[in-house]
Image 1 (cartoon, one colour):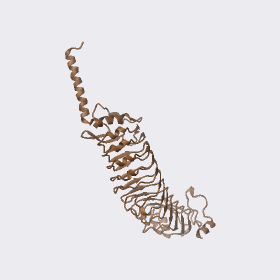
Image 2: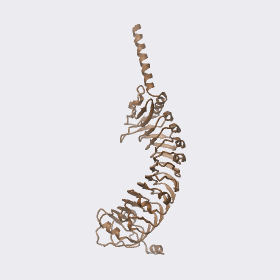
Image 3: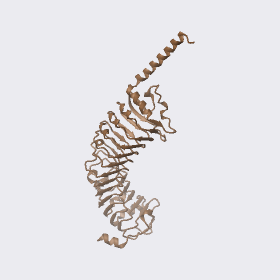
Image 4: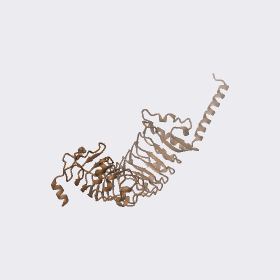
Length: 399
């Protein structure tokens, strides 16, 4: 039978435990504490992950993995083990996320997070960084994200998001990175007003419409719009940009001329293939871009000699005419040109000795032009087996 002394000891232990829990709650704002509990209940570790092992709510949540606090508020929440190869998390983003009023950074590592983005994200007025990529998010991007006026980075790439890119996103004044590639987004690109936007990645969606001359700010350094259904000219918008160091507009329906200034951009790789660009190509000076791909367009006229300094040049499947410039032959035989694809055009000659030995490190394809190729070199299989374009096609093109 317990003595009065035992009861006093039990009472003291109970009081200590009560005070301990009060201390834990005092370390973190109670609203943030409850929000973290709700977030935890909506998520689980995938097999092989133990990210939530430290999330024991009888201890200080500011010591949880991925939780960073300032005073009594959560300011950063990085969900999932960021190390490469981590299995990640499964579940949903609970709407209680909006209760973390001081949150400035929210990221979720690749995993199996599904469902829609909660509308309550718009309550995070201090949020500067939002990255939930390579998961299974679905539904539309909430237009209410336009209320996050401090947002600088938005990365929702590699998900299953649908619908338009909200126009409100384009009004955010401090955006620097917008990465929405590999989703199922449709509609046009909104007008981006931020003069600090440096990266815009919208590749692999189903976006359409034209890119107006003022749609994109001149501050852009990285622009990828590939694998969409964009159309119309781009010469006016591109001539405004002088900081671009990566440009990929391939796999669209862009039309009109390619501005000569584009070849002076400080980039290593220019991807404009599989569009409907037309007319002559006229670089202002020798092109120093390492790889230029203009294949599968409607470009015409003669091949500019200024392209002879490009290491990998793809001009195939266009409407180029005339002779291949002699400077190309010199650079090819010197192994300065590594890839020169000129097949499926209307070229009429190239001055190269039939006995010339093309360096093993270089690839030349002249197939299906208005000439018999003077040298036999291996071409891509999709070039077909026919070596020379039918005479009637060449005559018709001349006419």
